[in-house]
Length: 340
Image 1 (cartoon, rainbow, N blue to C red):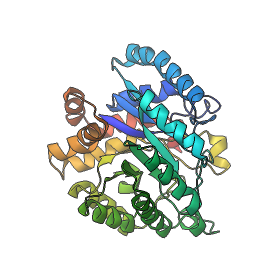
Image 2: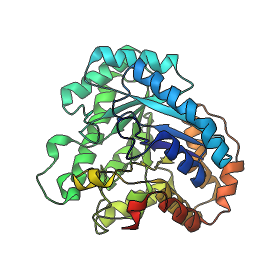
Image 3: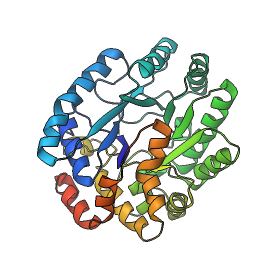
Image 4: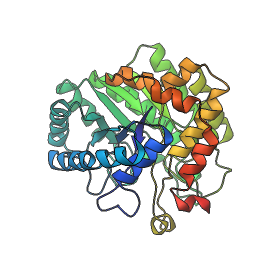
Protein backbone atom coordinates (compact mmCIF):
# COMPACT_ATOMS: atom_id res chain seq x y z
CA UNK A 1 0.00 0.00 0.00
CA UNK A 2 1.01 3.64 -0.42
CA UNK A 3 0.45 6.51 2.00
CA UNK A 4 0.81 9.63 -0.16
CA UNK A 5 0.62 12.23 2.63
CA UNK A 6 2.78 11.97 5.77
CA UNK A 7 4.69 14.42 7.95
CA UNK A 8 7.76 12.59 9.26
CA UNK A 9 9.21 15.68 10.98
CA UNK A 10 12.80 14.86 12.12
CA UNK A 11 15.64 17.41 12.06
CA UNK A 12 14.61 20.26 14.38
CA UNK A 13 11.39 18.37 15.19
CA UNK A 14 12.88 14.98 16.01
CA UNK A 15 11.17 15.02 19.41
CA UNK A 16 7.82 14.84 17.55
CA UNK A 17 8.64 12.21 14.91
CA UNK A 18 11.61 10.90 12.94
CA UNK A 19 11.86 9.47 9.46
CA UNK A 20 13.07 6.16 10.91
CA UNK A 21 10.24 5.81 13.43
CA UNK A 22 7.60 7.01 10.97
CA UNK A 23 8.74 4.55 8.30
CA UNK A 24 8.81 1.72 10.83
CA UNK A 25 5.23 2.52 11.88
CA UNK A 26 4.15 2.79 8.24
CA UNK A 27 5.62 -0.66 7.59
CA UNK A 28 3.80 -2.02 10.63
CA UNK A 29 0.56 -0.60 9.19
CA UNK A 30 1.13 -2.37 5.87
CA UNK A 31 2.46 0.54 3.82
CA UNK A 32 5.63 -0.02 1.84
CA UNK A 33 5.78 3.48 0.33
CA UNK A 34 5.15 6.96 1.71
CA UNK A 35 5.22 10.50 0.30
CA UNK A 36 6.65 12.95 2.84
CA UNK A 37 5.51 16.59 3.05
CA UNK A 38 7.97 19.51 2.87
CA UNK A 39 6.90 21.68 5.84
CA UNK A 40 9.75 20.33 7.91
CA UNK A 41 12.15 22.42 9.96
CA UNK A 42 14.09 23.51 7.98
CA UNK A 43 11.64 23.21 5.04
CA UNK A 44 12.30 21.25 1.85
CA UNK A 45 12.26 24.11 -0.64
CA UNK A 46 15.68 23.91 -2.30
CA UNK A 47 18.20 21.37 -3.54
CA UNK A 48 20.31 21.41 -0.39
CA UNK A 49 17.38 20.43 1.84
CA UNK A 50 16.11 17.95 -0.76
CA UNK A 51 19.43 16.12 -0.98
CA UNK A 52 19.85 16.16 2.79
CA UNK A 53 16.40 14.63 3.24
CA UNK A 54 16.98 11.92 0.65
CA UNK A 55 20.31 11.04 2.25
CA UNK A 56 18.59 10.71 5.62
CA UNK A 57 15.89 8.47 4.16
CA UNK A 58 18.45 6.33 2.35
CA UNK A 59 20.34 5.89 5.62
CA UNK A 60 17.32 4.61 7.56
CA UNK A 61 15.60 2.48 4.88
CA UNK A 62 17.92 -0.48 5.51
CA UNK A 63 17.42 -0.17 9.26
CA UNK A 64 13.66 -0.20 8.79
CA UNK A 65 13.92 -3.27 6.58
CA UNK A 66 16.08 -5.06 9.14
CA UNK A 67 13.59 -4.34 11.94
CA UNK A 68 10.34 -4.97 10.04
CA UNK A 69 11.21 -7.16 7.04
CA UNK A 70 9.48 -4.61 4.76
CA UNK A 71 11.35 -3.03 1.85
CA UNK A 72 10.14 0.56 2.05
CA UNK A 73 10.22 3.23 -0.64
CA UNK A 74 10.35 6.92 0.25
CA UNK A 75 9.32 9.90 -1.87
CA UNK A 76 8.78 13.51 -0.93
CA UNK A 77 7.20 16.75 -2.08
CA UNK A 78 9.08 19.97 -2.78
CA UNK A 79 7.46 22.93 -1.05
CA UNK A 80 6.64 26.17 -2.88
CA UNK A 81 7.09 29.68 -1.51
CA UNK A 82 5.92 33.03 -2.89
CA UNK A 83 9.02 33.54 -5.06
CA UNK A 84 8.92 32.95 -8.84
CA UNK A 85 12.58 31.95 -8.96
CA UNK A 86 12.07 29.36 -6.22
CA UNK A 87 9.06 27.93 -8.06
CA UNK A 88 11.04 27.70 -11.30
CA UNK A 89 13.83 25.92 -9.43
CA UNK A 90 11.30 23.52 -7.87
CA UNK A 91 10.17 22.56 -11.39
CA UNK A 92 13.78 21.86 -12.33
CA UNK A 93 14.34 19.76 -9.20
CA UNK A 94 11.16 17.79 -9.86
CA UNK A 95 12.59 16.67 -13.21
CA UNK A 96 16.10 16.09 -11.90
CA UNK A 97 14.96 13.94 -8.95
CA UNK A 98 11.82 12.49 -10.55
CA UNK A 99 12.33 8.99 -9.10
CA UNK A 100 12.25 10.44 -5.58
CA UNK A 101 9.90 13.43 -5.84
CA UNK A 102 6.13 12.89 -5.84
CA UNK A 103 5.28 16.47 -6.82
CA UNK A 104 5.11 20.05 -5.59
CA UNK A 105 3.18 21.29 -2.54
CA UNK A 106 1.45 24.63 -1.96
CA UNK A 107 -0.16 25.71 1.30
CA UNK A 108 -3.00 28.10 0.44
CA UNK A 109 -3.21 29.06 4.11
CA UNK A 110 -0.83 29.03 7.04
CA UNK A 111 -0.52 25.67 8.75
CA UNK A 112 2.29 23.86 10.56
CA UNK A 113 5.54 25.33 9.25
CA UNK A 114 4.20 28.74 8.15
CA UNK A 115 4.72 28.07 4.44
CA UNK A 116 1.41 29.63 3.42
CA UNK A 117 0.97 31.39 0.07
CA UNK A 118 -2.23 33.01 1.22
CA UNK A 119 -3.16 35.90 -1.10
CA UNK A 120 -5.00 35.49 -4.38
CA UNK A 121 -2.34 37.36 -6.45
CA UNK A 122 0.42 35.14 -5.07
CA UNK A 123 -1.56 31.97 -5.76
CA UNK A 124 -2.24 33.13 -9.30
CA UNK A 125 1.47 33.76 -9.69
CA UNK A 126 2.23 30.16 -8.70
CA UNK A 127 0.04 28.79 -11.49
CA UNK A 128 1.39 31.30 -13.99
CA UNK A 129 4.98 30.23 -13.29
CA UNK A 130 4.13 26.51 -13.38
CA UNK A 131 2.30 26.99 -16.69
CA UNK A 132 5.20 28.97 -18.14
CA UNK A 133 7.66 26.23 -17.14
CA UNK A 134 5.39 23.53 -18.60
CA UNK A 135 5.15 21.66 -15.31
CA UNK A 136 3.21 18.40 -15.90
CA UNK A 137 3.37 16.81 -12.47
CA UNK A 138 1.20 16.83 -9.37
CA UNK A 139 0.57 20.07 -7.48
CA UNK A 140 -0.77 19.12 -4.05
CA UNK A 141 -2.62 21.98 -2.38
CA UNK A 142 -3.70 22.46 1.22
CA UNK A 143 -6.97 24.27 0.50
CA UNK A 144 -8.20 26.71 3.13
CA UNK A 145 -8.83 30.40 2.43
CA UNK A 146 -7.17 32.28 5.25
CA UNK A 147 -9.09 35.54 4.86
CA UNK A 148 -12.25 33.61 5.81
CA UNK A 149 -10.84 32.36 9.11
CA UNK A 150 -12.62 33.58 12.24
CA UNK A 151 -11.50 34.46 15.75
CA UNK A 152 -13.47 31.61 17.30
CA UNK A 153 -12.19 29.60 20.24
CA UNK A 154 -13.21 26.16 18.88
CA UNK A 155 -10.67 25.19 16.24
CA UNK A 156 -13.31 23.81 13.84
CA UNK A 157 -15.16 27.14 13.84
CA UNK A 158 -12.03 29.25 13.51
CA UNK A 159 -11.25 27.48 10.21
CA UNK A 160 -14.82 27.06 8.87
CA UNK A 161 -15.90 24.63 6.18
CA UNK A 162 -16.65 27.37 3.66
CA UNK A 163 -13.00 28.48 3.81
CA UNK A 164 -12.02 25.13 2.27
CA UNK A 165 -14.75 25.24 -0.37
CA UNK A 166 -13.78 28.79 -1.34
CA UNK A 167 -10.12 27.83 -1.61
CA UNK A 168 -10.87 24.82 -3.84
CA UNK A 169 -12.92 27.12 -6.08
CA UNK A 170 -9.95 29.52 -6.20
CA UNK A 171 -7.47 26.81 -7.18
CA UNK A 172 -9.74 25.51 -9.93
CA UNK A 173 -10.17 29.02 -11.34
CA UNK A 174 -6.53 30.12 -11.02
CA UNK A 175 -5.19 26.91 -12.57
CA UNK A 176 -7.64 27.17 -15.48
CA UNK A 177 -6.93 30.85 -16.11
CA UNK A 178 -3.17 30.21 -16.16
CA UNK A 179 -3.40 27.24 -18.52
CA UNK A 180 -1.81 24.99 -15.89
CA UNK A 181 -1.32 21.58 -17.52
CA UNK A 182 -0.29 19.56 -14.47
CA UNK A 183 -2.56 17.72 -12.04
CA UNK A 184 -4.25 19.76 -9.31
CA UNK A 185 -4.54 17.63 -6.18
CA UNK A 186 -6.76 18.73 -3.28
CA UNK A 187 -5.23 17.32 -0.10
CA UNK A 188 -7.29 15.93 2.82
CA UNK A 189 -10.64 17.09 1.45
CA UNK A 190 -13.14 17.51 4.28
CA UNK A 191 -16.30 19.30 3.12
CA UNK A 192 -19.37 18.50 1.07
CA UNK A 193 -19.00 21.74 -0.89
CA UNK A 194 -15.40 21.05 -1.88
CA UNK A 195 -16.31 17.52 -2.98
CA UNK A 196 -19.08 18.88 -5.20
CA UNK A 197 -16.59 21.22 -6.87
CA UNK A 198 -14.10 18.41 -7.46
CA UNK A 199 -16.84 16.15 -8.79
CA UNK A 200 -17.94 18.81 -11.28
CA UNK A 201 -14.34 19.50 -12.33
CA UNK A 202 -13.82 15.80 -13.05
CA UNK A 203 -17.03 15.70 -15.06
CA UNK A 204 -15.63 18.63 -17.04
CA UNK A 205 -12.51 16.50 -17.69
CA UNK A 206 -10.23 18.70 -15.63
CA UNK A 207 -7.00 17.11 -14.38
CA UNK A 208 -8.03 17.13 -10.72
CA UNK A 209 -7.58 14.57 -7.95
CA UNK A 210 -8.36 14.60 -4.24
CA UNK A 211 -7.47 12.57 -1.17
CA UNK A 212 -9.35 11.90 2.06
CA UNK A 213 -8.18 10.94 5.53
CA UNK A 214 -9.37 8.45 8.10
CA UNK A 215 -10.13 11.20 10.60
CA UNK A 216 -12.27 13.29 8.24
CA UNK A 217 -14.26 10.25 7.14
CA UNK A 218 -14.68 8.59 10.55
CA UNK A 219 -15.01 11.50 13.00
CA UNK A 220 -16.91 14.77 13.25
CA UNK A 221 -16.37 17.88 15.36
CA UNK A 222 -18.32 16.36 18.26
CA UNK A 223 -15.41 14.05 19.02
CA UNK A 224 -12.81 14.72 21.68
CA UNK A 225 -10.98 18.06 21.41
CA UNK A 226 -7.52 16.49 21.10
CA UNK A 227 -8.50 15.42 17.57
CA UNK A 228 -7.17 18.72 16.23
CA UNK A 229 -5.77 19.14 12.75
CA UNK A 230 -5.81 21.41 9.66
CA UNK A 231 -8.32 21.33 8.09
CA UNK A 232 -10.31 20.56 11.22
CA UNK A 233 -13.02 17.99 11.81
CA UNK A 234 -16.34 19.04 10.30
CA UNK A 235 -20.08 18.66 10.79
CA UNK A 236 -21.64 15.20 10.46
CA UNK A 237 -23.03 16.15 7.03
CA UNK A 238 -19.51 16.78 5.76
CA UNK A 239 -18.19 13.56 7.32
CA UNK A 240 -20.90 11.55 5.57
CA UNK A 241 -20.13 13.30 2.27
CA UNK A 242 -16.44 12.34 2.55
CA UNK A 243 -17.35 8.73 3.28
CA UNK A 244 -19.74 8.56 0.32
CA UNK A 245 -17.10 10.12 -1.96
CA UNK A 246 -14.65 7.40 -0.92
CA UNK A 247 -17.20 4.82 -2.05
CA UNK A 248 -18.42 6.42 -5.28
CA UNK A 249 -15.01 7.19 -6.79
CA UNK A 250 -14.89 10.97 -6.30
CA UNK A 251 -11.99 10.60 -3.85
CA UNK A 252 -8.93 9.23 -5.62
CA UNK A 253 -7.00 7.88 -2.67
CA UNK A 254 -6.72 7.63 1.09
CA UNK A 255 -4.00 9.71 2.73
CA UNK A 256 -3.26 9.55 6.45
CA UNK A 257 -1.95 13.11 6.95
CA UNK A 258 0.14 11.45 9.66
CA UNK A 259 1.34 14.41 11.76
CA UNK A 260 2.30 13.64 15.37
CA UNK A 261 3.30 16.31 17.87
CA UNK A 262 5.03 16.33 21.23
CA UNK A 263 2.96 17.07 24.33
CA UNK A 264 4.52 20.53 24.69
CA UNK A 265 3.58 21.42 21.12
CA UNK A 266 0.04 20.16 21.60
CA UNK A 267 -0.32 22.29 24.73
CA UNK A 268 0.89 25.33 22.79
CA UNK A 269 -1.82 24.81 20.16
CA UNK A 270 -0.22 22.64 17.46
CA UNK A 271 -2.53 20.89 14.98
CA UNK A 272 -1.98 17.33 13.77
CA UNK A 273 -2.44 13.74 14.93
CA UNK A 274 -0.80 10.38 14.16
CA UNK A 275 -2.64 8.98 11.16
CA UNK A 276 -1.63 5.42 10.28
CA UNK A 277 -4.04 3.76 12.71
CA UNK A 278 -7.02 5.73 11.43
CA UNK A 279 -6.16 4.77 7.86
CA UNK A 280 -6.39 1.15 8.94
CA UNK A 281 -9.68 1.75 10.74
CA UNK A 282 -11.02 3.34 7.56
CA UNK A 283 -9.73 0.35 5.56
CA UNK A 284 -11.63 -1.99 7.87
CA UNK A 285 -14.80 0.09 7.62
CA UNK A 286 -14.69 0.29 3.82
CA UNK A 287 -13.90 -3.41 3.47
CA UNK A 288 -17.51 -4.21 4.40
CA UNK A 289 -18.97 -1.63 2.02
CA UNK A 290 -16.94 -1.53 -1.21
CA UNK A 291 -15.36 -4.04 -3.57
CA UNK A 292 -11.84 -5.39 -3.30
CA UNK A 293 -10.99 -3.49 -6.48
CA UNK A 294 -12.21 -0.18 -5.04
CA UNK A 295 -10.12 -0.67 -1.89
CA UNK A 296 -7.10 -1.54 -4.01
CA UNK A 297 -7.63 1.66 -6.00
CA UNK A 298 -7.94 3.83 -2.87
CA UNK A 299 -4.88 2.44 -1.12
CA UNK A 300 -2.62 1.69 -4.08
CA UNK A 301 -3.61 1.61 -7.74
CA UNK A 302 -4.92 5.14 -8.34
CA UNK A 303 -1.74 6.62 -6.85
CA UNK A 304 0.30 4.27 -9.05
CA UNK A 305 -1.58 5.47 -12.13
CA UNK A 306 -0.97 9.15 -11.38
CA UNK A 307 2.66 8.75 -10.30
CA UNK A 308 3.69 6.10 -12.82
CA UNK A 309 4.55 3.54 -10.13
CA UNK A 310 4.41 -0.24 -10.58
CA UNK A 311 3.45 -2.41 -7.59
CA UNK A 312 2.36 -5.95 -6.84
CA UNK A 313 -0.55 -6.88 -4.58
CA UNK A 314 1.16 -9.15 -2.07
CA UNK A 315 1.44 -6.55 0.69
CA UNK A 316 -2.08 -5.28 0.01
CA UNK A 317 -3.53 -8.78 0.20
CA UNK A 318 -1.73 -9.43 3.48
CA UNK A 319 -3.33 -6.37 5.03
CA UNK A 320 -6.69 -7.13 3.42
CA UNK A 321 -6.79 -10.41 5.33
CA UNK A 322 -5.53 -8.91 8.63
CA UNK A 323 -7.39 -7.82 11.75
CA UNK A 324 -7.55 -4.05 11.22
CA UNK A 325 -8.40 -3.17 14.81
CA UNK A 326 -5.56 -5.25 16.21
CA UNK A 327 -3.10 -3.58 13.83
CA UNK A 328 -4.47 -0.13 14.68
CA UNK A 329 -4.15 -0.80 18.41
CA UNK A 330 -0.50 -1.80 17.96
CA UNK A 331 0.12 1.48 16.17
CA UNK A 332 -1.62 3.47 18.91
CA UNK A 333 1.00 2.10 21.32
CA UNK A 334 3.71 3.75 19.21
CA UNK A 335 2.22 7.18 20.03
CA UNK A 336 1.67 7.22 23.81
CA UNK A 337 -0.19 10.55 23.79
CA UNK A 338 -3.11 8.75 22.13
CA UNK A 339 -3.70 6.85 25.37
CA UNK A 340 -4.99 10.06 26.96
